[in-house]
Amino acid sequence: MNFLISYVRPYFGRMAVGVSIKFLGTIMDLLLPWILAYIIDSVIPLRQVQQVYLWGGVMVLCSVIAIVTNIVANRMAARVARDTTQRVRADLFAKVSSLATAQVEDISVPSLVSRLTTDTYNIHQTVGMVQRLGIRAPILLIGGIFITFTLDPVLTLVLLSLLPLTILVVTKISRKGIPLFSQQQTRVDELVRTVRENISGARVVKALSKADYEKKRFKTVNQALVDAETAANVTMAATPPLMDLFLNLGLTLVILVSAYRVNESLTQPGVIVAFLTYFTIILNAMLSVTRIFTVFSRGIASADRIAAVIKEPQLLQTQAHNTEDSQAYLAFHNVDFHYPAAGQTLKGLNFEVAKGETLGILGATGSGKSTIAKLLLRLYDPTGGQIILAGQDLRSYEAAKFYPQFGVVLQKDVIFADTLRENIAFGRTFTDEEIWEAIRNAQAEEFVSQLPGTLSYHLESKGANLSGGQKQRVLLARAMVGHPALLLLDDSASALDYKTDARLRKVLREQFASSTKIIIAQRISSIQHADKILLLAAGQIIGIGSHTELLAENEVYQAIYQGQTGGEAIVS
Image 1 (tube, rainbow, N blue to C red):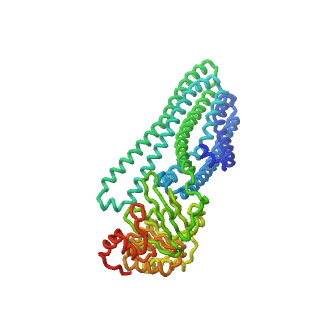
Image 2 (cartoon, rainbow, N blue to C red):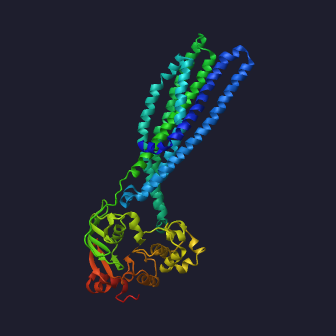
Image 3 (cartoon, rainbow, N blue to C red):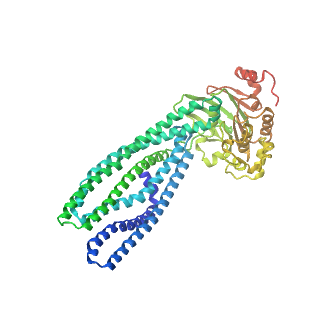
């Protein structure tokens, strides 16, 4: 609740104006039955038509004022709801962008997507409805009761006798409904995750003929969401009929008592007509209040979910660290690492890379090759040891100074739905000449020059309109543009043919001689010319040296080489 108030607070001034306008319009609505009762009981008996026209005109004026003020106030409320939701969504997106990888994995991507979409929409509905009905309904309710009390206190007391029971029911149902809406949003997260998995893995599903299996899996998740929605909505749906029951019981009692009072000349007919009109107003106000409770319950549940993300601590903070003496440009000193809730992934890594050198990393699947890349990019911090870059601990770098040093191609990298130029520049300032140079270096000029519009060619999300090799070369161009100080290439040539791979290696040797290069590969041919090759197994270094040294001394490296080449020399 406090979280939502903090975002609405900047608009309290606009809300106060809107509330004042809404208050005026609501008062006009409340005056109409009173004027009608006055006409029936006091004006008509005088048999003066002009007085009837006069008071009829007053009723028309009140109606016009009520309509105009309600429209203006509702539009102001809509703008406040829009601006509040915009700020919440912007802050949530910024927070999600700054979360550590471990936090994203803990919350889950589908849940973050759901909070950015469904939950922010619920907040929009809550802020808007609270302003539209949250002001009008209580005024109509309290004002209606007050005016009916001035008209006939006895009838009003009959109506109010059911009010305590009404308040009790609304309170009980609301307390039960809020947790149910939180559970419902959790089910929405699961549904989003299932849909994303099916869309991302559509080719696998079709290739393995598992469409029926996935339909059953989706049906299970979908049914769980339906059950959660049903439980929440059925709980909250009990409020309107119970309100109808209580208030109509009150109306029945009012009619019975009023019939007796009119018969005894204790109440005038106009008062009864006005009272019944006010009763309808009070009834509608009560129903509006119950609607507010339903929407408010959903909105509070969503606000709590968003607040939980925004209040996540900053795990990867910039802090000063003492560094071990090292002349190397990049050094891993006794680095240990394990993923959250997982066993040891890397253990006791020690190696150094000089400025401009090329380090090749080779190992079986699951040996920890990509984990080294993640640690170097500070997607995670090591659980032990120290990583030094240019004489400084990674944890002491400011992000603005740290990441511009890198050119990166990750194992599972992303192409965005944008132009080729923007996918390569990626928000950085580069000229077309620099981008074309990067394209040539990435061996992509041949196919890029044939694309309609070349650099303006629009790529689809995840590079769906490119082949695997074309996609990798675009990613390589993104990494190479601007000649970064450190090139980190994680399995970046797996989709390239040997000839293209050889040309790429030549470019890295000649055009990027001053850049330090970390190349993670499956093929020995991609790293055989590295100054140093790191051989990993089960998160530990089992060999380090040049291709020639490892081939002569390391049995595991010899086996890999034999398996990939049949013992023949690799032609570069």
